[in-house]
Length: 443
Image (cartoon, rainbow, N blue to C red; front, side, top):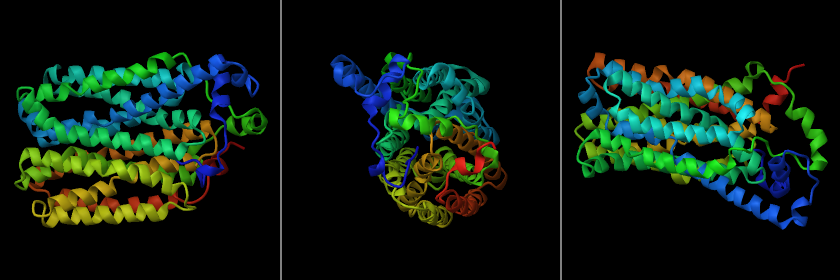
């Protein structure tokens, strides 16, 4: 998500005052809650609901993908998928994120971010529940697209919710959100195979059970769906902030926005190749299916501690490029290991690729750091994620084609390593200390 400035300690916005007028749809004067204890208690409960909603939603943003990766061979065999079709299946997530993510800011302006995220969680639950029983590959893809549509809009709006409700704790909440996302990702990868066995051995039950977690994520947002506003700046800042927040931006004019979008796209390419294909790479090298799922979980669980640390470190650095370089070097080392000794050093390669995949929380952090205002963050988030996911679409599909045509993993792994080089370069460019308002404002 994002770190908003060079250090969180410089943010002193009073969030209690900031949101009170939003809930009423009026510009209440500062101090209203101090004279109305009931409003303060309501605000405190709303904040708790937002925190619960953020954490539960983050847990649901990847299980639809990693649970499928753990059972991809069984799904392919049962539905009669070729390697190319399976590659297409692993390309569906970024396609849906690109297509549906760009609609998120418009939907949020009309219905409010909470209502859109609530609907997104309901779409995830519905898609995951019907996907295994839709019948055939087309139905499976359609139900997957429904779940991924919910993930797409939530992906874009989560940074907006964090900035609006926690303007003085952006780095901390970004880390918490990223930890929950990594935890959900690794949990689905680790337990899907044994859970499938416990449910009778059917891959359909093993995939459908994740709908329960998505249903739980709907609940915290229900009391908040009528809140369509945003957290206004404190009254002493409001006049100065309004003009900047409403200035139209043309992201295509911003070199920083493009660098961030390409960086986002290349890290997403690596992540979805890893989530979709890494268990199969290990299984083809002789690693048992259950162990291959655990290895993917190890890769994903590395994001739990690092996703909390990286945003906090990034917000304290004037340039985030060095972090992108370190993550890229870890990725290159992991791919080299997969190429030369996939089974012998499997645990080491899983750890290195797990560190490399933490380019995702870094990208989200830079989204917040490269824009000054809430609307700017929303526009940059939609541009970077939608454009980035479009860029990432060919990667998993190309890996599937190369795997089927070559009969091995040499060429696909070489492709993954080659893509890491421009990712590092774009991370350096996106990490420069500047904002899109400086480059993209309409004059």
